[in-house]
Amino acid sequence: MQPLYKIFEYNFLYGARLATAYELGQGVKIIGFEERDSFEVRVLSIGKNPKRTGLGKKALQFLRSKFNKITVSEIYEGALPFWLKMMECGLVDELLSIKDGSSIYRLVETNIDRMQDDSNNGLLVHEI
Image 1 (cartoon, rainbow, N blue to C red):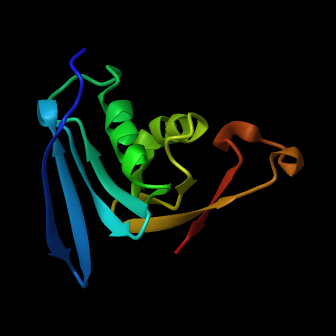
Image 2: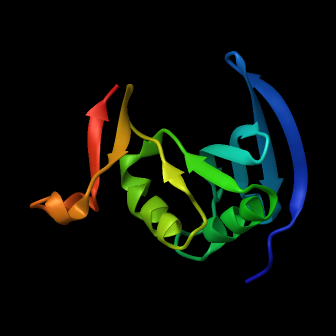
């Protein structure tokens, strides 16, 4: 697999916030919000590339080299297993919220030992 290279970085207004976009090689793009040494990922797209080829992980490795703290917000439910794996790998520090249609749900970490059903990987969902 070819390595990803930073091709283009730009900023734009997203509501009242200044968003940062990184366009990487092979159609990979990251959009989020930069604040000092942390980055809140809002979009990670691998373009038309097939899933499970390591492009998302490589994009996060690029981000990790630039930022000490990486959080992810408005995660689509189908992508949650990917983000949990990236958190397990140490490429993401915190998952903030899940987006379900027009609703956004905040993720709250729980004590797995106290949970009877571990099917949600120790995360409880609270509607915002």
